[in-house]
Length: 279
Image (cartoon, rainbow, N blue to C red; front, side, top):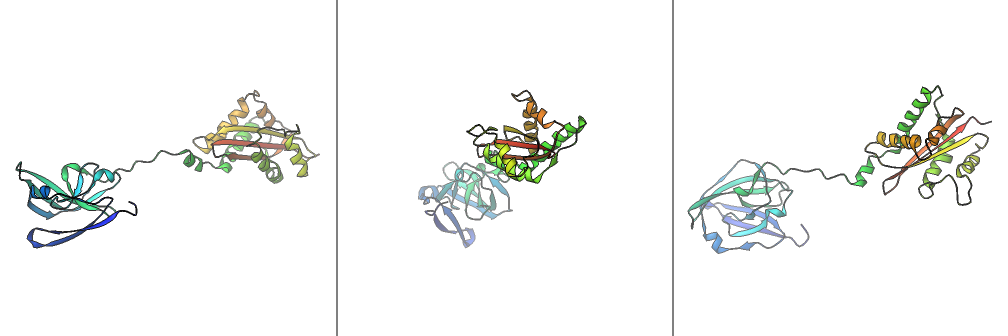
């Protein structure tokens, strides 16, 4: 509903001389038809228990059908609750119809609608398909990193090697810097041909050691564990015939820093820097 919607109040004389008052918010002015109003006769009108219905065909009317308001198709996600019902006789055919007075769940809309257009029960809410943006919300870099390290260290232990240990300097001064760099320059080298990570290790005061670096560009998996598994698979079976994985399995390396980042287009970048004991 926008700011041009009109609030209409309908006062109707009910059987027994009772005056009823109801309001209906409408996107368009009601259509009044004296002919339609005279074409039916009220057989009875009673209160009824509260039942939930939904529907997308038919119209909302005033209680004697004189005013026709909005079509139910404009409320595809609305649940309607009954308050009264009435039996109308169509004079021309001598057939009767049952109409329910219904009110929307939020209380903003009300009117009378033919029972044949209503379906039993509240409207079913369908879950919207997960957008790529929503899928990314489940991505957790820390979890991906931990899952990957668990896989890597399990493989190292199986070969009789010591598990790699996290190093704060490598993490903050090298890997966290590199993961941002590789989103625009997916390479170990800068434009001058220099090995980028060597300079970062030197700036961190860690130049007196052996260093190694592996890079991966991947996609977001259905779960963080799946993303980590995919990264590990690339390192083991990539175009370099598993050279990245072999580097990570070298016995000389003791410390590591790892960083993973997902970009707005859903690309996952991973970098892992390893280092031996300084000498």
